Image (tube, rainbow, N blue to C red; front, side, top):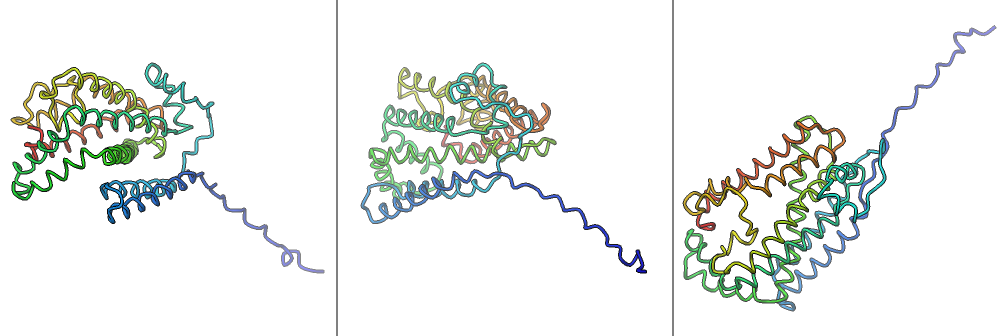
Length: 332
């Protein structure tokens, strides 16, 4: 008779739980590769003088492609529980003005950002083109080069050749188009940096958020503010005497709705920057971003949202004040 204990076989260990692979936005890789190839081709054509464009235009396309390809490896948010039906683009464009909380809650499940990115980029490019046309390339370039000499970055004799080159580039229709396309890259890169800062700040304050949720929130929260800002700036640009428009400060906005009007940018650059950050549109932007972070994240309290929004806002003010203190002549 065999020993029952000797014949005993222990049950196999339970299978280890596996973490499901989260989906990644791999569809970004094809346009990323196309942008990089187009950018490399433009760099080559600029270097061999086939196209009268700046090398920087092709380099911007290459950078945009590399950035999109890198972002395609960041997982999308995993928020299947409690998912609501997606809003269409028309609903989101209308609701972001009078019902932003609904838009941000929908972005928690469907973090779409392409439409506000395109609108913001087009508005920025249109305003920049109108600004250059209204003030003339000569005045903008001459003012900038004079400030470079005044700051001691280059002697007056050495800057003259560059001055003429920059004026010719600013007048070239191809370079104007290229500069507009570069602004698309600049807008996307800046928003990515801001989204990463918000993601870090929300995490520090104890919230939970995905990068794509943060990116979508920043784009949609910025859309109504930039739309109002650029449209008003365009109106002011063609109503106001161009001789009264600052060739550098006016490139961003002509709306004077903040405390910066109380200070002279040349005499009090730090106070001017700090005051410019306190205004109707800037406070509206701060409120929109706090509301977006609270509703767009998975677990973000009101305290975490406002703490992150105010923290990044203060960081922007500090950076702006540092640059103003180091280079006050450019805003004088």
